[in-house]
Image (cartoon, rainbow, N blue to C red):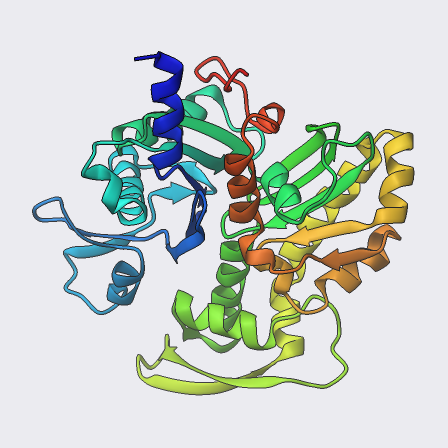
Length: 355
């Protein structure tokens, strides 16, 4: 039987998938079905036995509620694989959950995985190897700003500038895209997780109050802002007083949290300004008319787009459904891989599909 015919049959019935492999959350897109999984990038491990007890949502629910020897860990740090074996297990969990039926026929899926801008060849190979070990027959990589731009349906293949700021859990990706490629970019390890750490540090320094990461995230989402709000907001927070060791409740305002986040927000804006300065003048003219596009969970910080607009003099807008932009973009490439092969990452260890 014709080899090309067999390949076409496999292509039609295999559940090829794209994964936005984030530091905080991972989303899985299945060809022909869309995004079917959105779970925390967390794995619960029994340190006595090395056994993996839970992955994703179930593992996150265990945080802070288990014996000391059961640890909930994130296998990715700043979007990069820090623990190969645990990343492989997490990818296997997502792949098997996404395409159970095809494992009956032993049809290994093609996989597209998003990576931060500027990762090393070693880091790219770690993602590729983890994907293959987890059950994929071939692994393609796409840089996060490119995926998010495609997810926002920006004309990335045109000869015009598109300015992307993707603020995830572990990294902020700032990039200018034109003609299917990244013209200039930088990856900053200041993002959603750092903002949570800022709030934890603020509570300790100002109130001698120890709070957890989950509490810090709730504060950030509910009253966190980068720009003064029209109406004052406040929120009670509970934690342990570091002096007395007893539980305590205090009330913080949006102004307090804005002060806590100020330094990190300034670092993000500085990275945006440097990228603007590095952009060729012809593309900058396009960007000034099109604006800056904010993606990722961090883009939902209240008033961030206003502050960036004020600081850069370029209109900044939050993309529709910014949390899923990378997964939707990687999924769109998966559905149209022959036409969009130029947007995939080429490296010493990878081959993009040839027509």
